[in-house]
Amino acid sequence: ILNVEQSPQSLHVQEGDSTNFTCSFPSSNFYALHWYRWETAKSPEALFVMTLNGDEKKKGRISATLNTKEGYSYLYIKGSQPEDSATYLCANTNAGKSTFGDGTTLTVKP
Amino acid sequence: GAVVSQHPSRVICKSGTSVKIECRSLDFQATTMFWYRQFPKQSLMLMATSNEGSKATYEQGVEKDKFLINHASLTLSTLTVTSAHPEDSSFYICSAREGTASNEKLLFGSGTQLSVL
Image (tube, rainbow over all chains, first blue to last red; front, side, top):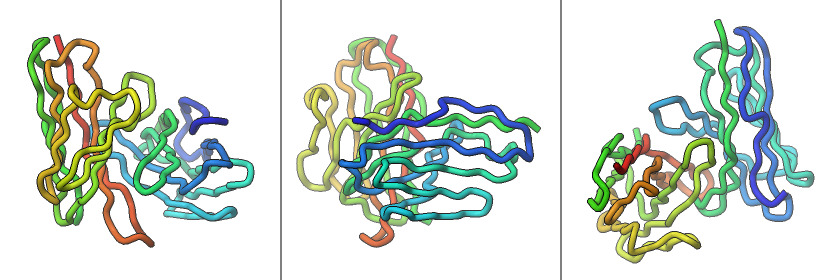
């Protein structure tokens, strides 16, 4: 993997479902992994910053894990709510310069 | 709290005109800001790194004479798209580093949608 890749591109779930998506990055060129939530017409909001292999972070119903050796991070949302609908971006960031994935757009249907 | 304010949110202009986009850091000082461009269904692509009081650093393939960046103060960076053409139509967004090394994060503006007719 040469760049940051996210999958799936989009996801539709029902309210209450739990979901997860993937961010892949070159393990040989890793600095820090950032996750953002980007709602339409708003600024991307920082969710997590992870740097160490095995890191796990949690914020309410959202959590993330990091595997730097194999080059991936998972973002989990437990019990999705309509307000979780957004595009979730991940980025490999070095001194503020970020390489972003294309994002996963999540739609949670009531 | 610390936020990045970006204006305007949307610009429609005629081909050949220049457009200035401003990003201001509120409640914090931003020595470094980053400018990104996003085409439809693509990822945010870093265009340049804006440093207060010095010249911006442009990424490969980004024309510095086309995209003029000025970072004259610790709270304001501007991106001017000079002699805009339809191919410059895109979404432009800035970000700034906030916090110390141990808890640094990137704060983003809300973006500017540029449409060149």
